Image 1 (spheres, rainbow, N blue to C red):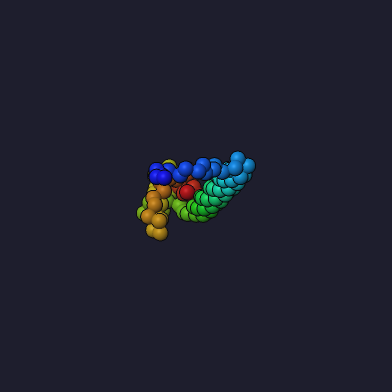
Image 2 (image 1 turned 45 degrees about the horizontal axis):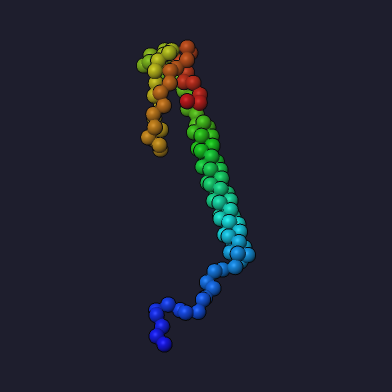
Length: 107
């Protein structure tokens, strides 16, 4: 008797529904855990960025420069534009002197 390329006996290749359902639930649980961990990591990063931003702004706000602007004769110069240049950061901060010729602080 000659057989074709197919099996003559029937073979059950289907996975039991219960096992497949349990695997699907486990995959969904793992996916949920990964999503939660991803959100935690994003929150940690956001907190770190916020903390660094606040630290930088408090450092910059703490910088003070005081002085009085006067001409060569010693007379104060009121309401004149001055620019403070930070050599470390290479940033310029423009301001205007007060009526008494002092530089407002902090600038």
